[in-house]
Length: 275
Image (tube, rainbow, N blue to C red; front, side, top):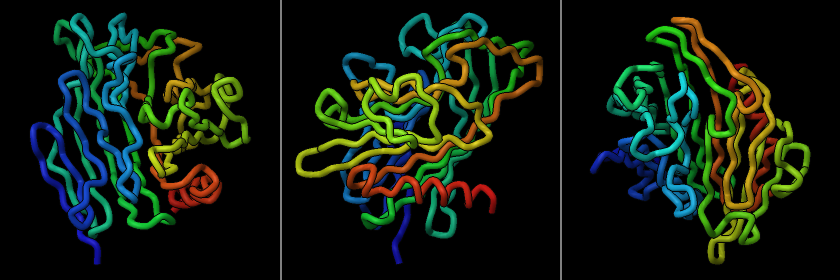
């Protein structure tokens, strides 16, 4: 039987399967984020902080224009997401769950939002069994009204490893079969996949938003970026105590999108939801 374990070092909770690293939850100063992320074959698929956009931290949540404050960038003068993480739990030797309470803070330290976030990492150890990461988030207006401005810099972001991006031959494809930045940018779809070559390996990552999430056009870039952004084209206001609820599944796979069978995996996700 495979053995799961978790070890914390320097603010990073590393998840291991049979002594091999598979993923980690990193508690950074500006936000918590998921990095590194490895396929079952041990190939990295995301960038932690690329030169062109250092705030693209692998797999992360962020938001510009929360009551006028920027919690998307990670630099002086911006807000931040302060993590009140709890020790992770191993579930039946098949998954690791992180449950935390996060404060979305203005630069002054004022709490703008309180978030309940759950990250569940389910390692796969063969090609046909990819690494799965489920994310559940409840963001509540805990200190008066919260206003989310119209912006392209919001949502759940995924930044692919530099070797996998479209500029280096990587392929973006969505559930409708549309491809590349030109074909997928600003398109609605049930899911997106981004895959490319890392040395001799083809690997990728797929993002499945839960049907409870608002439908929205996806933000895709050949530089290796996918963002699911519900507030890109309209503003949203939360009354005190109001909340935004979102759920996602990420599939980290060896092979390309066809090898991963995203159609079947998405169907499995919907079945898991119903169950």
